[in-house]
Length: 283
Image (cartoon, rainbow, N blue to C red):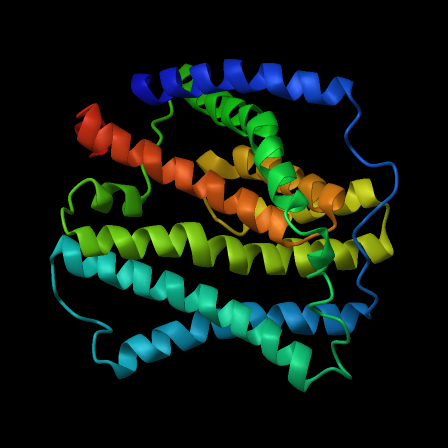
């Protein structure tokens, strides 16, 4: 844990200087670049129900059809394959539901993917996203560090996530490839389309943008069902909405989210294979 806190502190100090410099320039736009999504509450909740219900049902059903559900295999490799199969399945299902609703049920969900905009800005969104990543990364890391320190003071032991424990025990390169694609590609794409492209834009049509940012970020953090990362993910959700607002392009929060997950994977690899501290994460 000391290694993680040390890396977090170093990154935070360097990045915080960039963040403060950027804030003095007043980069947050005064006018919104993200269009609100105008639908009724009924249709909004129906869409969310379809997204999450099918994302939970379809992967488990396919896993059962393939004959793996309920397997007694005790191997870590099998458990990791199962974890990432279900994760990728849920992420792909979320994306598929949104695409199908956009093209086959337009009368019920008009403009559900209209948040995918800003294509004419070419590469400006990419440069902006990378800059904002280094500006805002310390806020998320400091939130994580604050939670860790608070838990230590209260004597609460933070249990590592099961996926992290399994990664510390698996040496199959193919499993790492699957993990990277699930974490860096599919997860940011699915979650940003839902929480920024749908939830945030809908809430923005009903409330002030500031409240829409806060509520969408809260839902984003709660959905991960992990108490120890609740605050960091809440801060991350706010940052992702701000990046979306500045660029007006859904690709920006997707890229930001992907880079963030990539650096998290990098820390796990660093902890295990370079610093040889992986044993500290194991029960």
